[in-house]
Length: 134
Image (cartoon, rainbow, N blue to C red; front, side):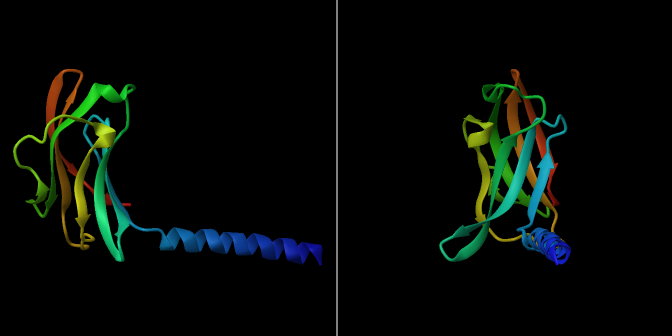
């Protein structure tokens, strides 16, 4: 009897893990070529509406958060700027910077990218980061 209960409990836990993984909100992720900055587009709630926000995060070999700063960014859908991309937005730390707020969920056939201009170790770089559904 104890074996049956133990086996049942293990099966329930496995089913819960599988269910949670299927119900987890999709997000789109990409990194700069040097791997130091990661761009993430994720689902969030704004009031009763489900929207998507985009943020930059430090990744890779940057040890001090003050080593890298974002100078400018733009959110691109199918090559067209949907947010940002105007004149320089100023300098901000990577972890304090978003690239889009309250946008819609990307469609399956859309090409999602982020343009980022950033300064790392006194070198300014500009890249287009393709985002992939994860």
